[in-house]
Length: 88
Image (cartoon, rainbow, N blue to C red; front, side):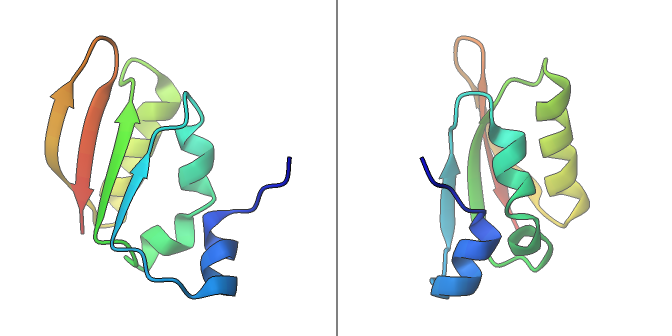
């Protein structure tokens, strides 16, 4: 398979993203890492992400979003994970 970071995808396509849902079965940290410029530049209005806050890397994702100006808008828990919506 071929992949590219969301930062690179945005740079090449210039598609505006208002809302993003991230649910990648444990690879959320890598997705967020690949879109760090979009996050720092606050190009996305709202991000819904499924995290297991018992995992260190998922706590890091939440921290990274907070440190870059995204605040937690809503949080709901399912069996193991939590759906968190962040807004800029």
